[in-house]
Length: 244
Image (tube, rainbow, N blue to C red):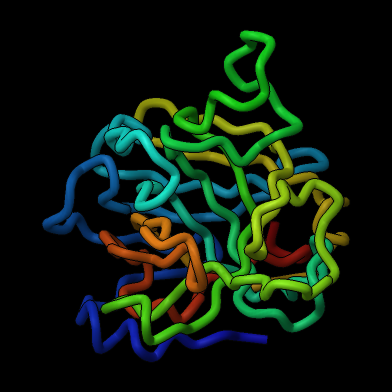
């Protein structure tokens, strides 16, 4: 199953780049080097799938400036949209585009089960790079991108992953191993965590998101898209068991 973000081709008018079993190779663009994608791929390493983005600069070197409040807070992210069904990680079936994300946001912490900075507190390390699964859906009120992390309406009780952090959106905080160093951003996802898929399609995106200043739906919109590996968010790359 492939998902199409047709609106992105209109919004960003980016050229298509080469892709093959080794992922998606992208030319250097006009965006900040830390978010300028040059190679996006997924590969198997032991019992894990490694989601990797290589950039023209130093990965993870740019993080949002703290605003001092959750309302209006910014999120910087390296994102891998996939064709995996949202149910593969514990959400309701067919909820939207399931994407893996590596994020930083110093104004809030959404990994309540984890103490990433090792200071004995679980609620003060949102600025450190960490992993999420999110479900993306279209919302015309989200500005040029037209995309948001899917909201959970008040009173609704959808199926959610066991490590859902409690926010009223389709987000998971799985605490996967990750690396952000040199030119590479990587997340290691256990194959068991995604149900041992035979194959799936994927793409690469670097983007900013922003929390609604009024703290209501849509709560978290994609506010800026800096780079798209494929140029058109068509998820052209494929990982498969036969070509790991």
